Length: 320
Ligand code: STX
Image 1 (tube, helix red, strand yellow):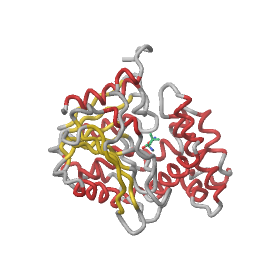
Image 2 (cartoon, helix red, strand yellow):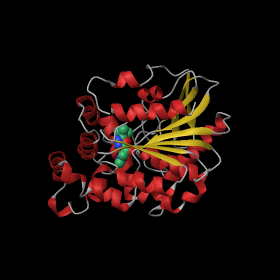
Image 3 (cartoon, rainbow, N blue to C red):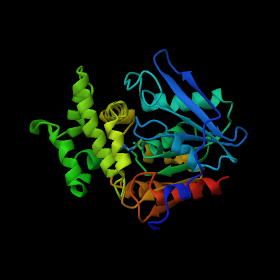
């Protein structure tokens, strides 16, 4: 529960550096950046970042006991240090699932824990459904199944009722005659040939998401949207995936739950998550009898919120 004296540093493991990092050419176009940290002989865990388009972060290493886990992270196609930056071609959910398998085999790992929040939960679930014998467990946060209702809630009409102040500049960036479909309107701009049009749209798109991710807004988190290299990859890749309905059938994850029912799943969900509202976590939990759901009463969407981080660390500690 919330107490203002506990900080993120108190609940996470100390910062560590990777013991190895590299790049893997997955197609003639895309090369992905990866890193390993913690114990090379530890239990493997693959960390799947959000967005899509968010990129891995050094802080993600700190959710695992470094003496127990071999912590593997990578930047999904087009983001972080992966190249080409912000590239949308050959960038699909199936391609990312295949990249995860390519990494697993390249590292000689039989099975691994799969850890992901937000879009990372989406991709973790689709990965496990595609390769149901490879996930030892699923550790999921801020459940996002990317259905039309979830996209409409966050990008069109829903979260706007709670954050009208942050929503206004996101909406007003688009002329009124295009405001009835904001994802589509942003897609046009984020794929414009004019780099300034792309950057301006990316900044507004990313500001909206950063402003709504935490119960208590954090200025350093909001600054992410001002790093336009980050924002362009984040906004372009997110909007590309959402315009294409993540290249899957509507409700693909819930319609294919049987294939992952044997996998123990831990679900950590912030009650006041307005980016990925709790209903999705609830529906997933109901569909997965082997899952444990913790609804954190004093948090929003971000894994950088203290109470969410505490639950995630408790989950990875319990799985050691
Ligand atoms: N996007 C949700 C998501 O996956 C709809 C996400 N939101 N913020 C992030 O990811 C970052 C933490 C990667 C910025």
